[in-house]
Image 1: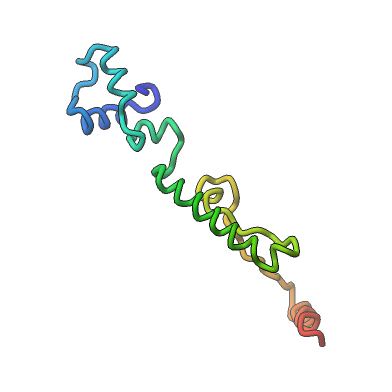
Image 2: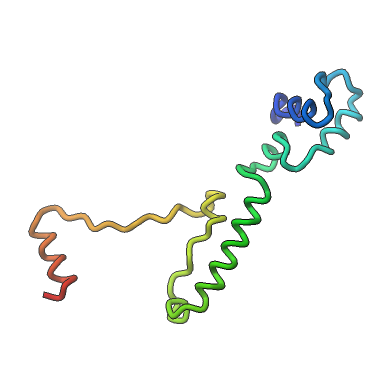
Length: 121
């Protein structure tokens, strides 16, 4: 833990146990206290590469499940449509944020041709 972020460990120890000089403790006691820090402590959050509290991860997972269940009962799902975006995947950078699709035209004639095609003219 010290090698990961010494300042975060010292700050957590001071906040939780009132220990301001980590190095004054015997090594086994310091290790025991460090392991006993809460899961939301600065050092444990950093060690687990968490960018937000565990509760937020769980809430995002619950939202995704409920949203998927809602979607699965739609006509779009029955036709094999695209499932909803996962908030949890977006928050954990496992999926890109949804991007809107844009049509780009090089000139006015290309725009008018696309407009006519969409309107069925």
